[in-house]
Image 1 (tube, helix red, strand yellow):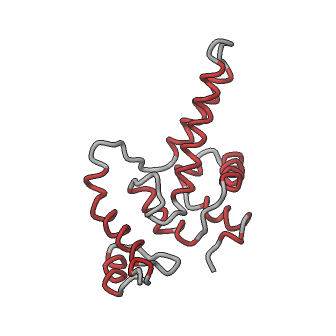
Image 2 (image 1 turned 120 degrees about the vertical axis):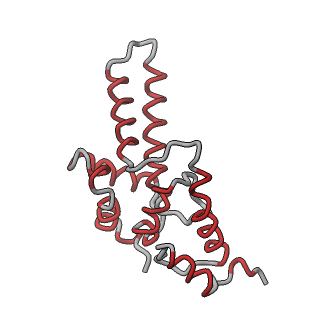
Length: 167
């Protein structure tokens, strides 16, 4: 029998609760172990990397790439297009990671874990198109939503894609 697929132990769950983690679904032992590891590793993992305080810089990177593309010379057009696609994918990946279990996250920052713990754990991972639809709608409605109120990503996700909410 594979114990890692068994439900998390009460000791694991108590430890996670003491550290503010309240997942919206039943955790496996493996998921709980990964969450506990990540709770202890944030100080070391973030030591050399810039940590985002809000997801707003990711939006700013997309805006800069769009601006560069709009004023690009024919010689730099392809590179500017690639830069824009990379910035969009990075931003999208950030938001998708906030809905993934810790064993699946590509972006292991404190902010991603905090958003996952507070809201993202309540949802299945959206597909790329769904995430982009939410980002586009919010960007059009409120220029700095991801700086001032990042939690509205999840409200908008639930309104537009209620099937993604864990039962």
